[in-house]
Amino acid sequence: MPNFLFCNYHPQVLKETLVRHGFTFESETDTEVIPKLAKFVFDKANEGEGAQPVTFSQVVLEVMRHLEGAYALIFKSRHYPNELIACKRGSPLLLGVKELNEDINSGSAFHDAKFLSMDGHSKELFLSSDANAIVEHTKRVLVIEDGEVVHLKDGSVSILKFDNDKGRHSGAHSRPSSVQRALSVLEMEVEQINKGNYEHYMQKEIHEQPESLTTTMRGRLIRGGSCKAKTVLLGGLKDHLKTIRRSRRIVFVGCGTSYNAALAARPILEELSGVPVTMEIASDLVDRQGPIYREDTAVFVSQSGETADTLLAFEYALENGALCVGITNTVGSAIARHTHCGVHINAGAEIGVASTKAYTSQIVVMAMLALAIGGDAISSQARREAIIDGLFDLPNRVREVLKLDHEMKDLAKLLMAEQSLLVFGRGYNYATALEGALKVKEVALMHSEGMLAGEMKHGPLALVDENLPIIVIATRDTCFSKQQSVIQQLHARKGRLIVMCSKGDAASVSPGESCRVIEVPQVEDCLQPVVNIVPLQLLAYHLTVLKGYNVDQPRNLAKSVTTQ
Image (tube, rainbow, N blue to C red; front, side, top):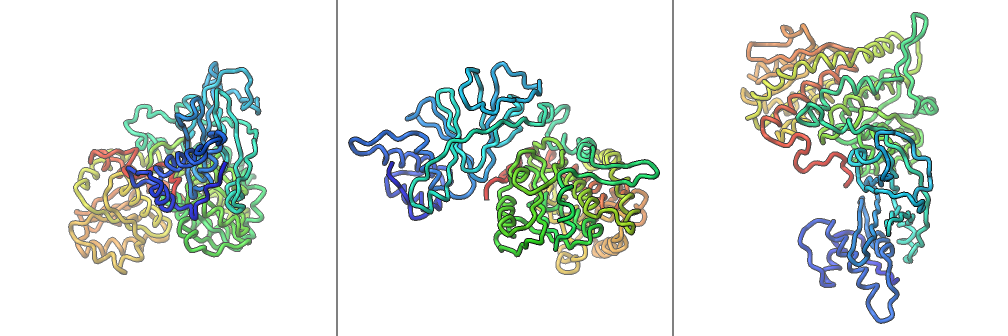
């Protein structure tokens, strides 16, 4: 087959080349370039007398050589009936395998590792980017790796491994090798992806948080008798704890909600470990090529474990020799498979695009990470035990705060006509302000900004008037008196205040009758963000429903951001 090497792999360059060869395009998407490129390769390979017939896999491999960036693709062509090819780079792709006599609720393991050979059994195959779409059909899946090409032909399945870089650098075709892979079994139930008695997935996932937090902590918190110390056991990290404690610094890397969860956990990790903790937005770290050292521990936080920017940052940190730790909700995801060690948050399937229960479980896992790294120093023993007691009681406190549902619906009715919303927080609850504002942006499509209260006088104060609604998070912690001062300053400028405070503190934080107060249960300061975010999640949900927008699939957003 001839070599059609273009001078560049950028979609725009490929598109311009194809246009010169007579192809027309109906959209501006990069995706349309791919089938047109496949047709160009097919035509070129078959032109001229005596040309050897080109196989479907040869066409797809040639197309893959000219693509860059993240993708997950399925090819089907009328020129190759009864054939289908799937391939991926960077984006997730799963192959589900179901025996036609299989009971998907049996949960039995699939022991035939060489399932790709023809064994005489009829199979049904499913291709998906998300396990949630497959689990109702089968729990047996193959996680397709980067550079693998899955070829379905006349009922048989084969996998080819393609080295894209080798083909590019040599200027010649790298011969793909055939590989055998074993199936994995999904650890999830069909019931997890049903709405149950709820109207929306987001609503269900908000109200599931007492149970998801319990599952996150199950088997990891150890509270012995009177003579036994209270401890945390994170099996996925136990062999690396000494290395993490000796780190020059700990670097949290994430995007969106996962970044906010790490930000909420940073203070307690610094306090208990004594190791400097820095925060990095994944895309910014890659853009800057920020310094990462061999003595660093880089912690990658991602609900899906497939976030494209986070994976690029992971590859960068790995190249620089850092110890890479993954915190993800998805077993078998890229981050779960490729990091040196990590912790699954076990929050259960999260279907709604706006993350809710994964956020709170991430904070809890990172609080347990701080306890595990902090070890058993006598100086912090009382503090550690208070946090562990608080973790045990946390599901009950979240269950209590969920009773504010109707109150948040009433507040949403008052705010639904507003154009903007400010949320002020500080200390542990700066992350709560950011995450609460993000939820309102994501689903209610309303401009909202989370702000560090300490920065109020450095610009944001100019926005304050009697019309702009402002939420101030002022629950009891070391920053409480400073937040009282912020409330007074906003009130003096006729700010339209909504204050979140600990139960019993309404009189201390309300400067006048016009101020609306939301009282929440008080817990340990490092766990307070878990409780405080719940009313804001409920507010965002009700605002969205009242406005008539799609709660579970906000416009322009996807659950797993697998493209750059």
